[in-house]
Amino acid sequence: MKYNEILDSIYWVGVNDHDTTLFESVWPIPQGVSYNSYLIRDEKVVLFDTVKETFFLDFLDNIQHLLGDKHVDYLVVHHLEPDHSGSIKIIQDLWPEIKIVGNAKTAEFIKHLFGIENIHIVADGDTISLGRHTLQFHMTPLVHWPETMMTYCPEKKILFSGDAFGSFGAIDGAVFDSQIDLDAYEDEILRYFSNIVGKYSSMVQKAFAKLKGLEIGTIAATHGPVWKADPGYVLSRYDRWSHHEAEPGIVLAWASMYGNTERMSEAVAEGIRSTGMKKIAIHDVSKIHPSYIVADIWRYKAAVFGAPTYDAKLFPPMDNLLRLLEGKRIQKRVVGIFGTYGWSGGGVKTIKEFVESLKLELVEPVVEARFSPDADYLDQCYQLGKVIGEKAQA
Ligand code: FEO
Image (tube, protein in one colour):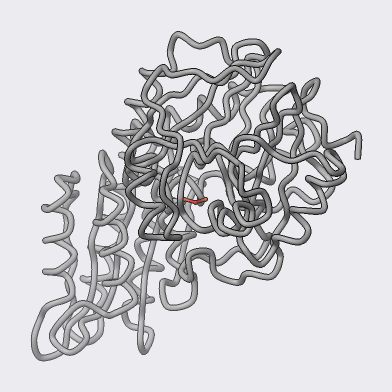
């Protein structure tokens, strides 16, 4: 298993998960996901994080392949979400002398999660020497849980970053960024960032500020490849995305029960295309999982939302998308709105309230047709597309 040595004496001992359909029971992972754990073999042996409990046997096999009968001295816990902490209790039962390392919040949470007490508590800047390697701990709370922290090893210039700089998508047969087609993989990095970490963008920025002085040659996150050939690839994207910086382009997210709002959506798309804008991600929110739409909205400068009214409120799949975006605190986007109503409004009003609550830039005209759009309404939709198409290029 030589290919799992990521740097001299530092190993990837994680697993790939193709069994889980929905990560956190919410997010589809058709390309799977990896749970990365790492091990440093020195005078003392340290393990960084574990894997989801159901993968424990494969995980143990990886560790024992490296260690034989030798045991692990330290288990550093960067994050307690069970995709990484699920095997902690079994590891502790296996090696009762193991020192579990975490911060004060880790100690609080691990007691409630697994009934584990008396962990080795570290604070910002604390170190542990393994012999030839030093572990230096950096607290990075809320990236994306309160107890999240990172470990830097100065001798090898490697950062064990937890979920930060992670991604969806299994890494089957690969470990490094250089072994992966990043052009194809980038969408899953963004979908992971926007749906899992994006809400905590300001905390990502605080983490960046804290890590500024470190010379980072390799990033070992808990999901996705080890960033060794070009750590700047993922660093620059996380930096840009956590600043809510967007690319020219537009998301057209629409819903329609009987085709009336769909015709308005087509008119909006025609207006957008009349500006020469080709980067249009068009999503029928009734059919596409919102995590893909959230990711595209995180990528592009502008978004248009169009939906009917349902039970005097916004059509439920669109409402679900907007509630998600509200939770993720998306910022700095230009937004257009259209929709339909029959005997009472509600749909367009709710989208407007969403735009106002996040202080997004609303473009005119807002188009709301009764039952079915006539030529005048379709022309307004075309105009809306034209205006937002221009803004999305800027
Ligand atoms: Fe990958 Fe937040 O656990």
